[in-house]
Length: 84
Image 1 (cartoon, one colour):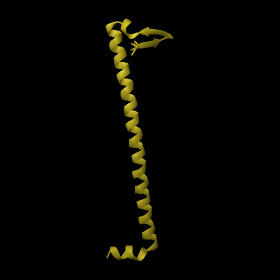
Image 2 (image 1 turned 30 degrees about the vertical axis):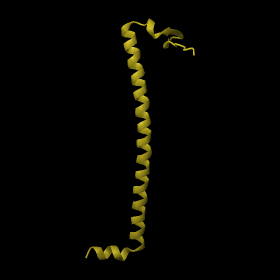
Image 3 (image 1 turned 180 degrees about the vertical axis):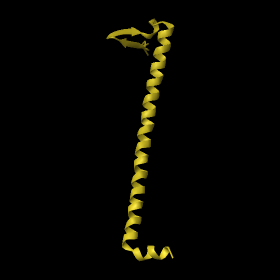
Image 4 (image 1 turned 45 degrees about the vertical axis):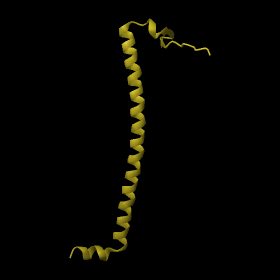
C-alpha cells in the first residue's frame, strides 16, 4: 500500500505556495482564515434552518389569525355576546 503525502498549499495571486513554507505568522493567519471560513459556512447553514423554521411559524400564525377572523365574521352575534 502506497501512501501519498499531499502537502497543504495556498494559492495567492495565482501562485501556489506550500503551507509548510510560510512563516509562522502566515501559517497562523492561514489557519485563522480557514477556521473563520468554516464558521461562516456553519453559521449560514444554521441561519438557513432558522429562516425556514421562522417562515413555518409565521405562516401558521397568519393561518390561525385568518381562521379566527373568519369565525368572527361568520358569527358576529357570538362575539357581541362575549362583551356582556
